[in-house]
Image 1 (cartoon, rainbow, N blue to C red):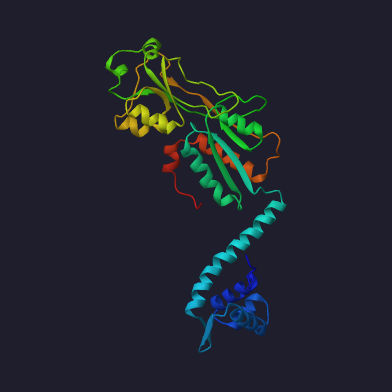
Image 2 (tube, rainbow, N blue to C red):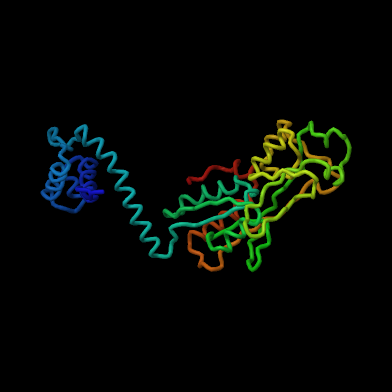
Length: 308
């Protein structure tokens, strides 16, 4: 790819001429001589081979081509400025990226709110979000390919920040044979039925968390797939309530009337990579995750909107 013939400084000069309404005004704003500004623009037009300005009375006016190119250049100059800012922040210890791995059962709405609040404070820092199931989160953190991890597992050697509980509900389609029994259910009733289990994404020591040892088991790759299967009448499962709110409201799913164990509430924790010093962006994100985890969704949506 050949190097650009026109510099960012030249584009900034053209923008100043147009925004200020003339060469003299642009020279004053840029703290340069008028002749220098005029030469810069003339040189640009020569390099591009396209007239950018025409003089209308005493005012410099964009040509049609100049209008198109100037609009494109504004984004270019803005991105270059952001790049320089990012380099400055990195020099001060600000991270270019935060890698966050999350158990798929954790409420996505909490993450959306935290990341939305993080954006205006990020100073160009990106967030790389990765979803795993059960021990998959632990493996990613221990491999060192994540800075932060959200999991309900007790990760050996790590002290987690306590987050909220996620409610899992035993559910099946209202027409499922278990509901047709029309009585309180025991684990013995479940053992003869098909259970839908979400596969642990870990490779080293995958777990069968939530499996009852039922005679028939279907293992699926994600919680949304498990939701679809069970909503269609294919087995029963424990699913996060926040993931099946619509299906419960529309009558596609119905909680199983278990004598005990129909609801499980594992607590989630926020872990950090012990091998890395937490930079300012990571620390800000930790605080936002904690705050939005603690705030009820209803209260957050009812609150006045901030100027994020």
